[in-house]
Length: 239
Image (tube, rainbow, N blue to C red; front, top):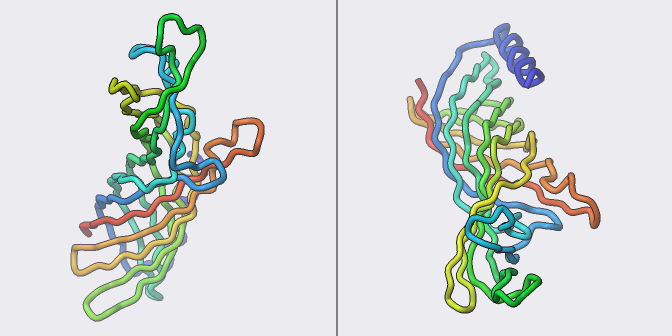
């Protein structure tokens, strides 16, 4: 966090010397999120013991299916006389990926002393709550009355919570559901490029962030890999 604050102060100090104007805006965005890498999958199985059990979990929640995500942010940027854009955005995000559930392991009969498999159909959402900081640099272009900012920077996502949220129906028709806390990355670094168009006070933005943090970096064996990919679309109001 200290490095983020130092970066923010440096951006403001540098831009002050060349600033033409300062702009403040509020943003709401939606988009899609998924995992990529050798361990990202479209389907998996779950372990289910009882409704209250702390041992219920999705075996691999790192789904490669694009899933709706949401966020809000505030932004400050300076535009220099040479149309260079220097900015900092900060906000909160709810990001989730999805994986299909094709089977479940449980003690389906009292006589069973070990977990047994049955076919199942369902979905597991791997949900993350982030505080996200996004420093960026870019250039402003003019297209008639529309100002277009093309920017590059990085997401610095501080993960508050990661939850495995599953619902499924097993072969006998029984419906099951559970939530489980999962290991979370302390920080998710995602290089990000974006474009924003402004007409007076209203802006429309699109961006793509390519995660560098391996969510399975603490796991041993087989070099497991799962990296976040985020595509965002948003609306801004320039104050």
